[in-house]
Amino acid sequence: MSALSAKIRKARELRVEAGGFVFTVLRPTPLEREEKIRGDSAARGILSLVIGWENVTEGDLIPGGDPHPLPFDAEACAEWLSDRPDLFAGIADAVVKGFEAHVLKIEDALKN
Picture: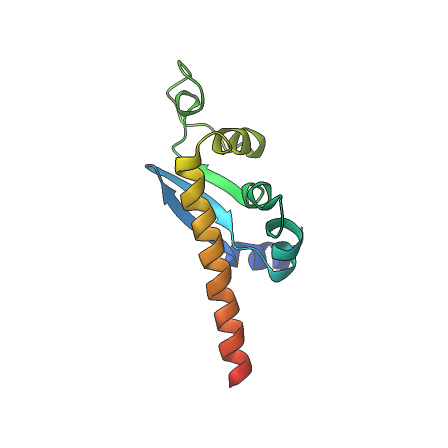
């Protein structure tokens, strides 16, 4: 990924607090919304937009796991969140609201 692409992507990052954890998610682009969030696989599409976490331990993911923070693992995160609707709901809500706010900005810019 080019440095400029990385900056564009970074500008789309949202921090989401859910269940005492902090997740980093990407606000979807309109194209990603069409590809990932519409239809029957919307939940999986939202899971693919989670790109980071803070202070998540193996013990949070599995009983008896190590108590030290883990580096982000997208596959493990998707597996964990797919079984934690209490956490997933807050993340999904933030992704949808982030997209809606972006669309409103675009619409306002077009009006001017």
